[in-house]
Image (cartoon, rainbow over all chains, first blue to last red; front, side, top):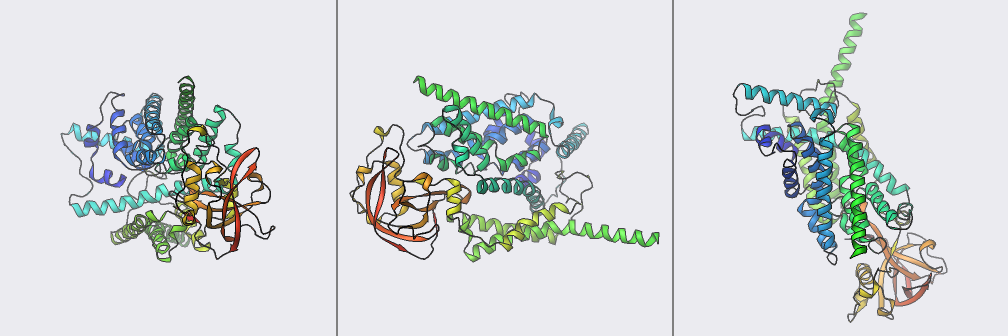
Length: 287
Length: 263
């Protein structure tokens, strides 16, 4: 997908769809997230490509956090798993929507574009930005550096996809190794029996989501198996937090952003999901 | 002397660049062939749900095609940005990322795939059907089991007991199941064993050990990981003050190992 965007979609075309207003610029991120059936491992590559092409950082972060949850496959799977509790579907989607948009906006205020990105990606983005300015200054209406014929472009997609697959794999394998070692070595009860009460229940399910890093398209079935032990707000916290941050995907994020930005994304996401789940619990208590 | 050292340095540099040029394609081919070999050996389902075998195999074939396409092209130029993962189309001149990427392939060759067993079940926490106490139990629909439960698979029992955990609804119903033996004294009454399988949704990362509690009529002769076939009837028991559903066996028979996964 990322390689296709790289070869077939020019920066100018892409940026034409992103409004200048920071709030409105989140809409395409949420829209693309809803249309693309990618889970949290696949969307980092796509987000990196968007970032390299000059899409605002806040838009890309919103896309990164929202797309694994707001895509049709994940929502449909949630609806099937929680068919006796349909409210879980819109709670998951709604909270994900709000958290992703808030984190995107907040991180966008931390600094400007390249200051937030991993150095290599920032350099690539700056270089593309300069080339874009040059084209505009000289009146060229589009770029053409990927070969003009369709087979040639497809060949470029193959080359780009292979390079990107391997560069993502380096980090994904490390994350997967840590996640699987934790699965094998740490008894799950040490996480699920953190303590009693709603606060510990939410924290336990969020920790479990982070450690297990289960794909967002199937995690609803997993969460369902904990429905007899944990209350619904804790399950919703699991379903929202897991696809946004997991052991497997944190390393992938570091390929796109500076470590302090990943830390900030993690801290704000954790806080917002936790507070949303607590509010959800209060709402349940008052209804 | 200086010329010889310089020649050696250049030769080593050329070798490093050659590795950097061809290693990505070889690794892509390696991963692709590994996936295809899993399909051919019929062991892909030891990792993933059978529903995903076809797309995964197609992805493996695609990786091989991409590798071939890359090899057929003119030699790929090598990145000179000096940064790892700069996002450009060229390959990294460093060798260690490729060495790291080859480790999983080597591990896969050294350790053939195996299915999960009792150890993982204990680590993941066995989920015993019949011991569930659903919140707001009065609202749970009672299941009317008018069908012949002899044909119930483990999955059917787990589903029925999750929907209606009331032991009274199952008393005397015939049971015929097979699964792995798991001793888990912390989560069941003494004198009982769990006969379990793994419920898999996508891949074994989400595999959950589920099963029924069976009265151990073998006086401890059955060990963990032993495959058994159990025929008996459903009955009730008390555990930590709760009424639970257990299987009282007529016959527990050791059998040959089977696929432990249910999808």
